[in-house]
Image (cartoon, rainbow over all chains, first blue to last red; front, side, top):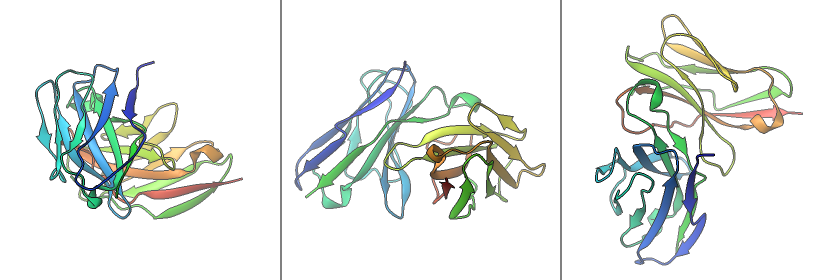
Length: 115
Length: 110
């Protein structure tokens, strides 16, 4: 079955280190998204992509970057990890941007702790 | 995107229908109503969505009032595995991300 996976599922890192979280989907969806979830804030959009070589900033993009070199993957990079980036990160994908086919499907999440 | 209002928590007995309300009085004509749920420590799971007509799928039914200012998600025969936080999201068809509020914590009682 097609699916969306994230790795690692848990990560502990130190302040100042570069960290990359992987997201891989096998639905051949054009659109991919990264969210973070913190207590009291719900899910907030970090970055998103509508296709290969396309990337866009979301609500909380500072300190994060993404690149889209193929349809299946959208890795999220924390250039210099900060304690404020301790969170649970979710990746999502959707088929199109219009009407009934833009439903987003989420991965299982990555719990990141920055010490 | 229009804002939504949901009760913070609800209880329902196992085997009964769970009816989760959502108010979205400022919804505009091109905005859809989406429902997601999040079981503890898992990623959000899509349930159903609609524009103005009632919708049904294998998981749930969505009832949208005629004026579109409110909706109800119905889980017809709730089980313990339906215990989760349920999010009602109003979103235009061209919005980029999903805006999650606090949702309703539904607890299914045995």
